[in-house]
Image (cartoon, rainbow, N blue to C red):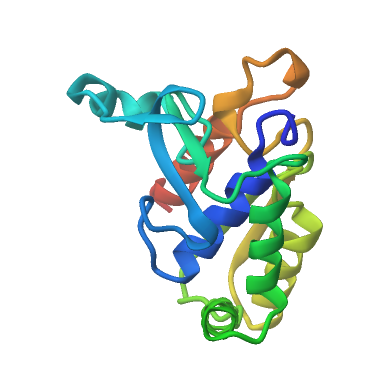
Length: 190
């Protein structure tokens, strides 16, 4: 599913853009997010489209009419030049690559949380951000730092509730109701 929807490339370009503090029209490596009239053909968003984004978009391209444009796309593999550019940002020695790595390093967490109860929820079948590489070790670090943290790793739950209508995700449960239950627990009078 993540490959079919081109999520890996979109996530890599979006994260690089966020770490470098760039907007959707000035992303690194020639990427750009835009509303598309046809594949590769940008157009302005209508007011009604913008009004619906909160409800029917997941925040990443492709979502609704929003797509990722790649200025470096070239045959024989149109994705490869942009992906190699992103790889160079992660491993290279240029100024932009150093800035990206410094921004990533600045997001490292300590596990120290304020003295409030915390419930951390993660889908066990999350193929985009695996629990073993994110929430699970963070929960361990936070507990070791004295946090009052409850960690719930939910079976049959993946990353995007918005994708649950796709046939490939039949049998998965939505994460949002679990979040709402956890919030109710945290906000209940004690």
